[in-house]
Image (cartoon, rainbow over all chains, first blue to last red; front, side, top):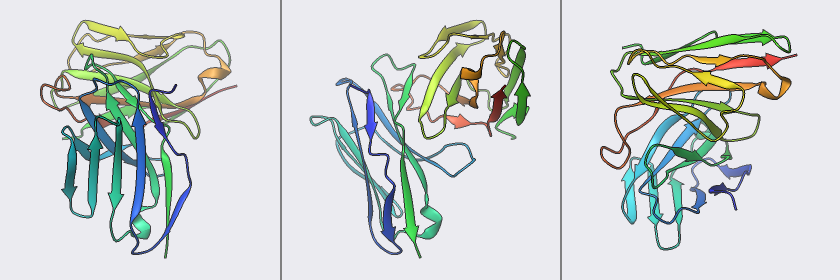
Length: 111
Length: 116
């Protein structure tokens, strides 16, 4: 079982719609969860972090964490073509020193 | 602040050659990391460092070496390049241990390496 799993996509949504990205992880005692956005040919940049069960909102982005089910999701409201990128889910392991990244979900927002 | 800088941006190596990928950060971060990213894949941790003089292996350390003599610099050494090391290499840094201060990793622009 992969430590962090994501649907590779591509996920295609029309402009203005909600994009929903999902991630599951295997280390039950993981503490910190991150969503990074990576444009083609660029380096990853952090867009959301979440540490407690529930929802965390930041502008058009909402991260959702359910530790009992071991999943974390990212919702992008009012999707824009500029949101088209690969979204990487990242989980810090119980030891704290290492971040495990998923393979990423490619998102396409159609104008 | 320049953040995390990496050199070179691109490099082509022949099998068996050696090279050093440079990484420098000016944010006074304790933690530094080296990742590789193969096409269509996520990031795999090669080595990391929790401070000057302290390094440890990540998920895929074979074929690589690192050193950390200063807080700012964390070079990655490839001794005998192999085609399997063709990848994009990212250096990253963070302030402190995750969980304690919920550190965010800041990434450099990457080095695209091809081994022929």
